Image (cartoon, rainbow, N blue to C red):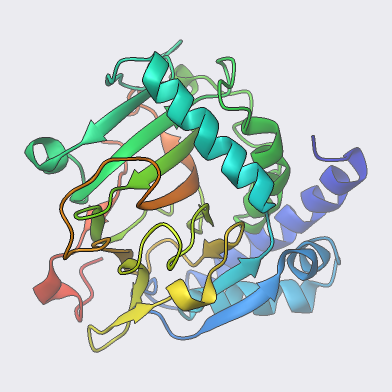
Length: 300
């Protein structure tokens, strides 16, 4: 759990960011291309968010809106990430794959997204997805640890650090906790942008490292000329990657020269945090896939 003193500081921070985002977002169109990729420690990030220094907070928001991405080093321990993967694998062995829309009392579930169903989603992807909700029993033991971090990013979005934590789907917006496995020999996620209506940044926590369980592919941002900027050399297990959610990003195919292998011992794993519109919301906002020929354009 996030300490009460942290919550108090983050409530103040959220007010600052809400004001700043209102101003910044009126200044021009949302960013879609990456500008710079900066590295900051998780400790320094937390210090910034609780500093109460409006000038520093404003500068950080302006940097995000200019298209800068950030790799936040050491947000989680490698031990925690390893435990989440191991428990997710155990969960998948015990529970049949399924799919459930986000209505009240929705169960946790996992689903293998193969070529035949990948086109049913806003962005084409080949991956094994796990969806967990805070009204269930947290079968992989991840929610408390992730909520401690999520409070900071909710404040960064201009929301209360406790926003949506008690919501159920009929309330409209809910917190959804994801574990993703991108299999060797085909796992990928096309270039896309994420919704900005409930949170202003993507929140991706890396649970595996290139060179260990996979050798090629991984996370990228898109530059203005359409070039994919490979971020994997900068990322270690436990790091988080953030950017303003409209910035184009994706996952290059994992080990494309190999045969498809869904074994959990190989491939790429990461954890995602999303405050999403539930299926009670008419015309709910979801991810937007971006075709390769449009990566240099502004489709938003």
